Image 1 (cartoon, rainbow, N blue to C red):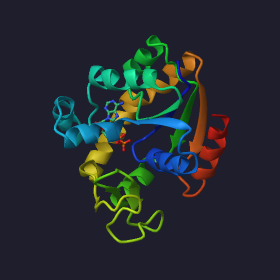
Image 2: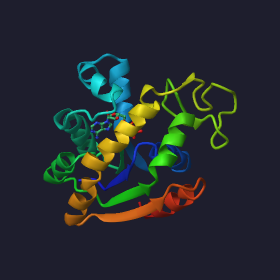
Image 3: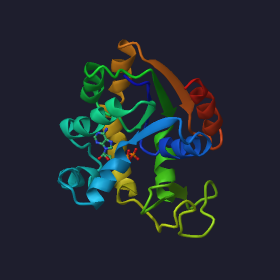
Length: 214
Ligand code: ADP
């Protein structure tokens, strides 16, 4: 059984960016499971799972629980380090599957953000087509060379699910299907820490501080 820390919040709350910063500082301390990135790589490689997941992802809906649980739970079990999950669990059934598998998280970090801030940030978000590193076209986290990833030299692109209508659909899915995960995990005794993600620059320090325990 590993220590599991769940990164939680609306799409675009900054989970991926916080993870990338943490990994720069403490590269070998954690096993990171980023479900969105794993799914995008399956989709790109046109695997069986990638093909099944594709139309859910493109429309902003969730991929069915069984497919996700089969991919994530063995990866958590296989790790000997502290596991950080980004984008899991995203439904009450996924949370229950984790608990049933004996992998109840130690901590849930809730990145709290307003819907309108999410919509604005999605308009500005660009990601590396190769390694998924996120950047913005705004001032915050701008790439050194326009259109090119600082980390791997890959081409920066807009994500197809960052169109405003799809972002609003994903926010709706978050409210209906994902938010109830918090009370399920709290009832199971999981500690919850909330970080205000509305103000740029505040969340990185808070997150680094919280992760000092692991
Ligand atoms: P964001 O956090 O910005 O929504 P992600 O990269 O985490 O984006 O996820 C992209 C898409 O992958 C989601 O819209 C959804 O279709 C799918 N997905 C990711 N995580 C899960 C999950 N735990 N359960 C079901 N579908 C998921």
